[in-house]
Length: 301
Image (cartoon, rainbow, N blue to C red; front, top):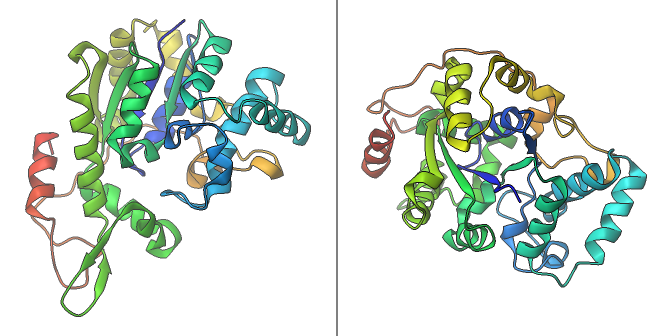
């Protein structure tokens, strides 16, 4: 059974695009956000009352769409209903075994998945590693200013409330997304300390945006996949993924809504901000925290 590839990154770190691009490789299968390792047994995805990244109902959409596509070859109201029955039959199964069943079904294709919620807790990433000891882990980074601006652009900044981004001051509390950028990346680093070097790789998202053939080729060589011109060309079309659009009414999401609205990719050079300037989401002229600056420099920014 082919070992899966997991993309590890905080939300709004190019994960949707990268996942879809790698998933278009002729030897891979790009999954939507399954969020399976957020819980211990499959049924718990249906009884949670909230989720760090949004509503609990949306958390299930990716799994339902994946099951419908993998087992029925299409995503319709009828196949989503089938997927619900598939899940109900496995509601008491541990999520590792459910994930292994999906990976076995698409074998020999390499499963590719990103669920940013996995980075909320090191235990979730360790559960992935326990289920798939041979898995590969791609740590995708984004400059803290760019990532935080993107987080603050969602739902007038309220999305940041789901990712532990509150700064308590003497007389008030303000939204401060850089805390989550720092903490989630630290979680990733702490987890990767237990993973052999050959099973992990780090890529700056901004580099990939500017020269995708170069970095897609590097990732493919690391994974042992084809890296010829035809394979690279296929990966340049994330919009061809069956999950790069909204799904049926009862499973609309499974990915970032902005990506679902416009999945087409064009290479472009990303302007990388300075680390010592005031950040645009603060009204008091404050900049990045020292620990955030230190970690960003470690990532090469």
